[in-house]
Image (cartoon, rainbow, N blue to C red):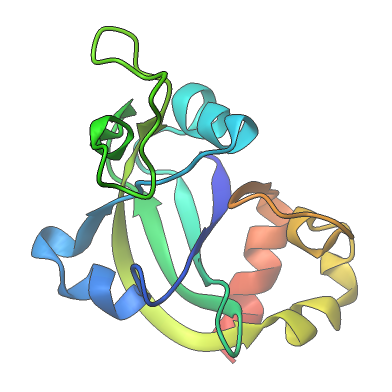
Length: 153
């Protein structure tokens, strides 16, 4: 089992939106970074743990727990010329972008970026590295356990 931190802007899809969705499952659409795409395409497996992170908002942070709920499949927004995620180089025969479904399992208290930075065991966490802007990052098992201990306090 692997663990991931996946960022979503809450005005696009929040943890509450995910929990309210049919089966508490949402498609993780709109990823347009090759490294993040490759994590979904090559490394994620059904059942992997996900830290559901609210980004680009007043108070960014971990807002819930989720799990990867599907294998990767083409992100249809790449084919929609009216979508902000449209990619004119993508074709149905040769899609460039994939997504996975994510099933929200629990809303948590918000674990903010300053709180994450204050925990010494998380000092090397990828999201806390200077200049990190990836929307999907791996989380080590030790980081996951540490966050689970703190999030449930």
